[in-house]
Structure formats: C-alpha cells, structure tokens
Image 1: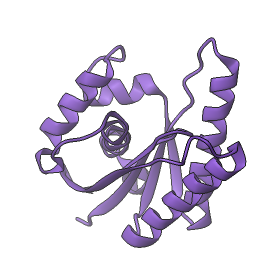
Image 2: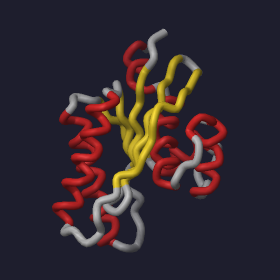
Image 3: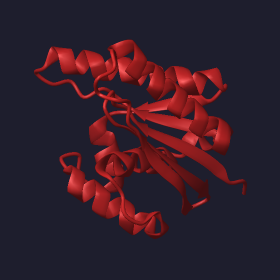
Image 4: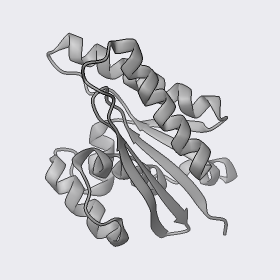
Length: 165
C-alpha cells in the first residue's frame, strides 16, 4: 500500500490555511500546516499573488500527490463571496501549475467527514482534527480547517482509490 500526501487548502484573502496529511490505508499522519497571511493593506491583486506564491512554495517544498480545496461558502455578502472565490481560484491554479489533481468539497461535506455533522462549528472541527492528528499540536482555525479538508479527501478515498475501482 502506497502512502499518499494530501494538501488541504482553506482559501482566504486575509488568511489562507494549508495542511498536509499522509494517508496510508486507514493510517493518517500529520506532516505540516500553516497559514499564508498577505498584508491587509495591499491591493487585491498583490494579496492574491501572495496566496499563489505561498501555496506554490508549500507545494514545491512538500511535493504532495493530491490536493483538496474547500468550496466557496455562499453568504449574504456578495463582495466577500467574490473575494473568497478569487482566493479559491488562486489555490486551484497553484495546484494545477504543479500538475496536481484537485478535489473540491463543500463545507458541509468536510464537517460531516470530520465531526459527523454538517452543522459543526469551527471549534468542533479543530477539536476533532487535534484528535485525529495528535502530533499537529496547537492549530489556528484556518490551519485546522485546511487539515480538515485534507482529512475529508482521505476519508473519501482520494483519487488513487477511485481510479483503481
């Protein structure tokens, strides 16, 4: 059984969380995590560039096999939803640039995979991520969410398992 290194991304313009999980059968191991924080005073294009470059550096350093990105959460603030969509686009482009296949998961799907309820809140996600990946240590909400995306992808079998079916 081969190990698969999965990059999970919780996209954002102010804070873009990323997390790497190694999946080998049912065994999941924390590899690394972090948050990309573009300076808030920068114009939109510069912040998007910072997110792209930050994720590109993570991908270059860790060489993941697959990537998973949280889908845009649609809310009443159209401007915020548009900005989040742009950050997602940058995350997808950074992964595609390195030839990674990218899965996308709805927030409720991620919450269900990690906590068992699609209505879970951020504290419940972080609690379960720490339980599932005890070596991850203390996590910011953005890093915990990104690791949750990677765990969700592993729980759904990733691409390799589906391709072999």
